[in-house]
Image (cartoon, rainbow, N blue to C red; front, side):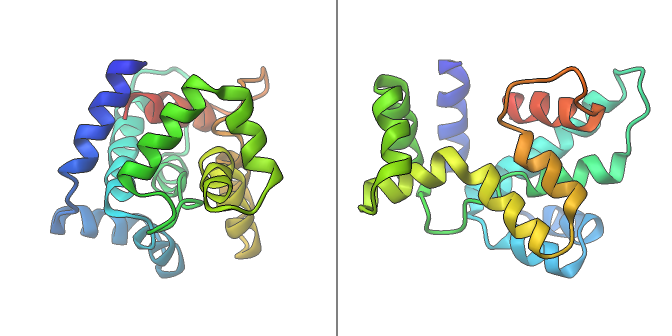
Length: 172
């Protein structure tokens, strides 16, 4: 887990969305969803792109039928609850460290106050729900359901798309 976080931090420092990446997003998402995707920070956009590509690779390794377009859409949108300026690379790094070293206090901070630290911890812990609420309000209930659950503990009835999203997110 630690090596993965270090890798994510280094990727964030050098994040860049290429023209090829933009075309991929434009192909996979309708304009209103593109707006949500591009409202994320560039490091979060790059993470979402890595997650989508990883999910596509993982798809070929499972035996169950998977809706490829739906999975890719969910992977691209799974972190839209974090918008540009919400956390930033350093802010997210501090949140990860805070949550790792003081998990109970960090989680309670996310739910109990209105200070800057508390708002940032709320976004860190609850971005999946925030993003899902946005998607639901726009009429994308199926995507919202997957995104709302992507950080929750696995359940027996999880769809193949949700399972793949979790795996791809962990690897990206």
